[in-house]
Length: 440
Image (cartoon, rainbow, N blue to C red; front, side):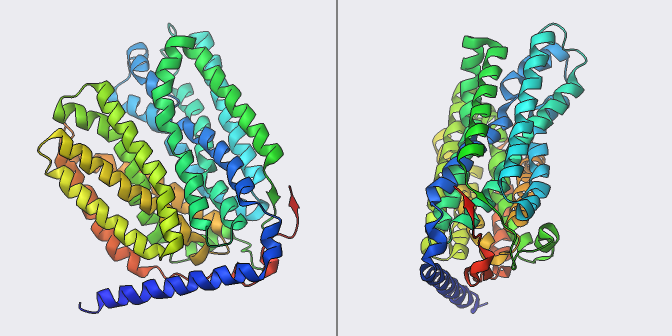
């Protein structure tokens, strides 16, 4: 028992030495990075992921209307609102693996075009059937929502693109910037769509969304460099390689806790604040939006901290913050304490989100896309699995005792992190692993 702090300190020091070695390798091969401008690799996938991830909110503002028009049960209403997230989470796995085989552009384009076709289908449906003839269209709405969810699956494709493009000590910041800025989309769209519906109507709002998505897809296609990932060190079976790498599963659990927990709380918090502290739904939505912004933007800080010190140490600190926040919320006697605990939870989740993907190129270097798909896809399922457990513990009024779930998950995470061994990626030692030609 007394050796554990010392063992953790030794691991942190080893991690920092590995990071320094990797940076020196990159400095010895400046010609490899000279062809690639990090901002050019990050800007376009970030814009594309932002528009794709916005699909999480495709039905959210209209669900109350659909409940009235289609006589939906609470279960069906919940499934309709969540179906883009479900399809996006599951599609991350195969498309992340495919990225390691064919590069970034083709998977990104297919996913964005699929999301665009889904939105066009929603527009067509609204034009013909909304609002008077929606009775038997639940299945069609599910199918279109799943298609829109393809945009959410762009996450591992962009993670792989940034991981392979940025090889110096700033990789954590770039990865966290890509993911953090993209994660802002659902919260912003959830706030803006009701105003757009009131001003432009349902069809007009969705049409504007489709146009923006089409423009971003074209910009990504034209502007984003193309990188071929096939090389002598690349895995011929990226998905199998990622599945068989032991480090994949602790990282998946950690992302399940932080990002899956984030998605769970986005759905949970409005009712939690409204039922327990008697605030208006508009105010509860605003509190949830602040939580979303904090979690998304603080992710960049998490990536930066992972660059400066050990990613493992950053994750340990983030888990401790989440455990503390869960305790504060569970014992909150006023709205102020609940808000403080909630936003503190967002800080811990965001920092951990940024640090987790800093580790992926180090522990799974030959299947970054496949691993990112598994970690991102299965991790996002926390948004489905955590709320029912919170409901069992917190009751029908979304009581504060439901947050004990995060206390337990954080404590388990502190045990899981011990089983991840951080090492330098082979690709930094083998220049042929990195692409020789780029379409810039």
